[in-house]
Image (tube, rainbow, N blue to C red; front, side, top):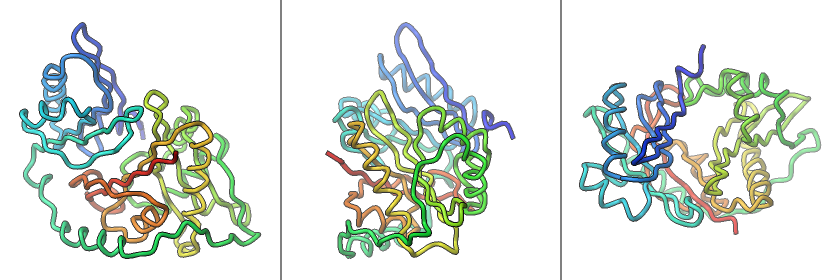
Length: 284
């Protein structure tokens, strides 16, 4: 599979605006990660790009001063990330172009999961790992094994992690993968994708083989990533977690992350299109 067809990062650079965006063909969405210049022109250009591909959802990471411009142009606020832009908040402004994409049947259940998670005690303590578990960080030589792990855990994933070349590319571009091995086999992994421009990182790609779950492995990986990021003065960290996963939402809540909204029908994961919760933490 050509992963470029799956997911393309693009730049539009004109005399009146600059836009960094992602054409996410698989998830039928257009995501704008950064922009400068004439905001109304930025919106106009991205609406044209969206129409060209017939995407169902358009997502902007907006600065505070532009939120009103997005609202007046038909966008809605779904979530936010404090400190995202070198200390300033990013606002997820979205617009939908298919009725079904804007409808979700699990919203109340997902609200109940959040309420249940928030009744848990905060727990920064980690369960001691058995000596047979080896924690570390992946290198490009681990790309094949990481791809195999993700293929085993996820039937469907919103990024092409099933493909070794894609994983290798992430590692070469600076993504950090924390891993745990057992019997010299990678059994659990999580990554941090670092934005060097705005000094933030997304914790993502969390996966543990089914037979090794419920042993607290993921918390060890998340803490290892946090320590790695803080040592590099990356203090704004966030994650976008499956709203229906009690375990993943609980793990982030217990590590001190705060809930900041939900992205409706955001991506295909496991076996369907799912809502995703946004959790953030300041490591400073």
